Length: 114
Image (cartoon, rainbow, N blue to C red):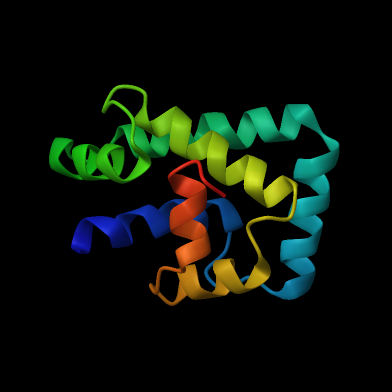
């Protein structure tokens, strides 16, 4: 179960602060949805951060994401950033993530079903 909670650190890292306001969420969503360059930069940063996790953590994340351990960082980050940009990763999901409580929606997004 602990491995699942690591997933949600990814979303928190993307939020750029420990307590995201609705306004900050909306601004980030607007930037992500309107700029392929910003999306690419965020995916690259997120991928680099996930790539530094211990092998056991990376394997657990790969299992949840239904992907290989080698492609897991980019796959998860692309799914999260895309979902945030198109509004499928909600403000409520971000808030729950910051509290360390996974939402079913966030798990579906990470699994590529969201």
